[in-house]
Length: 190
Image 1 (cartoon, rainbow, N blue to C red):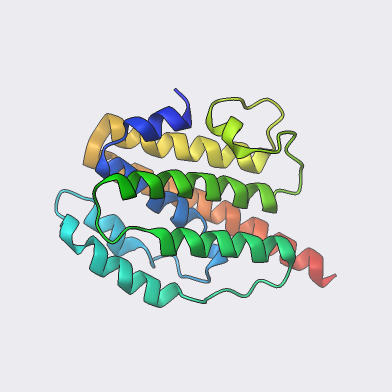
Image 2: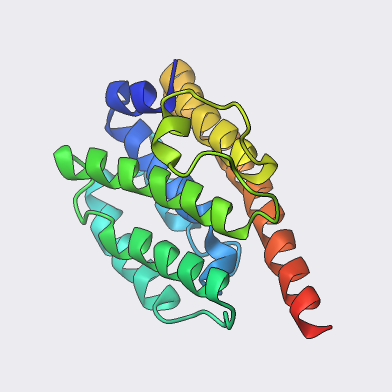
């Protein structure tokens, strides 16, 4: 099943986790610590309260607003996309706005990975990648696509029990992106 189809079929918890996971993997671009989004992840569990989402989101926005130290064009654009993901997050964890946000985060995260991938992706649009056309895809973009699909499949197949594994997938992706950003910074300094 394509990423587009998985997003279309996801329930509200799956959509929230999908958008949050994309944002979580892009934290290195926002200057946030690894625990910055942990309260939002917690609100997705059975023990969490969906009504707390908006308040927790505002707290996260307060911690991450304007926190980036990028000085090269690809990182600037990538950081801008990550900030837009955060600012577009709906205050209510329900409804059509959540689906739009999750879909937008998916596109933004893939674009971020394309911008930062040292190898060129043959396709100029992430839309075809999201629909399942993966031939000639660059490694960093391919890995991000796999992570997005995995998060949605975990939530669809396991519900709240899949949250821990979805978070683990995001942590792995965050480490990869942090390494890419760090490597690019070292290359610029030479």
